[in-house]
Image (cartoon, rainbow, N blue to C red; front, side):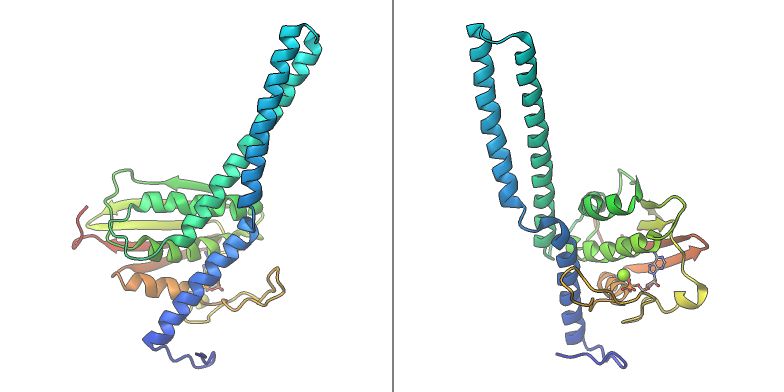
Length: 273
Ligand SMILES: Nc1ncnc2c1ncn2[C@@H]1O[C@H](COP(=O)(O)OP(=O)(O)O)[C@@H](O)[C@H]1O
Ligand SMILES: [Mg+2]
């Protein structure tokens, strides 16, 4: 199905297709850089290091019991063992990361009573190794540990929140001062509120009214690593808004010079905690 970019007619069919395409593109993009065929080799590294450690330990035992080695040699062997331990730990951490990414891909709708704090921690982990690290953004989590669970599928929350976080990262990309993303959860007057505040370029007043429009963007289209031009510009907030409104959730935005804050306001009255 094609969508006329100048005059998009947004039937529910088109919308569903857009959301599905957007989800695929979003996950694909994030995963591309990190996950690319690393799970197999990582497991090999982990196993091979285990074998090496085992063998080295054997050698060490033999050397020390036979009296063939001096202390210097034994110390060296000890150092190699420690190094192998580091390699193994790295492989283990990376393997965990890939598993998180795979989980992110597999998250499907339908799950209710979502613990948003857990979802947010996972989301941050998801971005941490790629974007936060790459763009030197500090993340502050200010999570209400008594937050009631909400009746929102984690996949929908994830998709919307990922767009907001991605925008925040992009807004801070070229900022020289501190780059800080603060994600806060709270419960107030029957609403669960999740806010994402960045120290980015801010949203000018004349832009603010348009940011949720389909295909509205202030960004230049760019080529991906594959040489494809990005087809998803101007989709993020549109999709986020629609996904959230399905669940009666409003997205509000406030911005000033050098900061922007998006908030999801999730009414809790129909839901159990
Ligand atoms: N955190 C933010 N800081 C500054 N501008 C933002 C932020 N989030 C969104 N915007 C503005 O809203 C526009 C629309 O966002 P979005 O729908 O995600 O599309 P895209 O990111 O592809 O441009 C962006 O082009 C940008 O101008
Ligand atoms: Mg975006």
